[in-house]
Amino acid sequence: MLTLKEKLYLLKLLKAEKRKAFWGFRKRDEVHDRLVEKLEQMVRNEQINKEHL
Image (cartoon, rainbow, N blue to C red; front, side, top):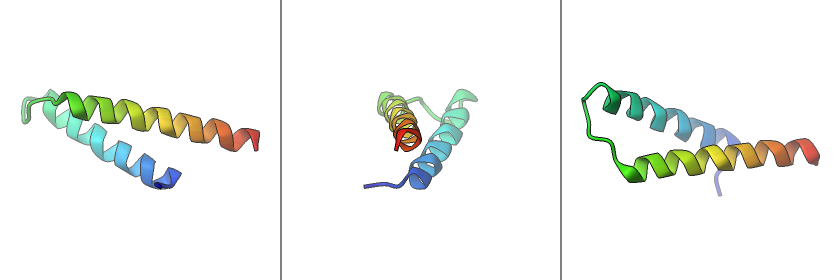
């Protein structure tokens, strides 16, 4: 299982790759977008759960 810090780092890397794709350096991939969405949701859930514990 990934820690919150690891998830945030991966999310940062994936978003940097997305910016490269935006400028035409790479083709956007559906899997990439889904992975970003899932990681964002996991981070939000973990932060909310941390507040309630």
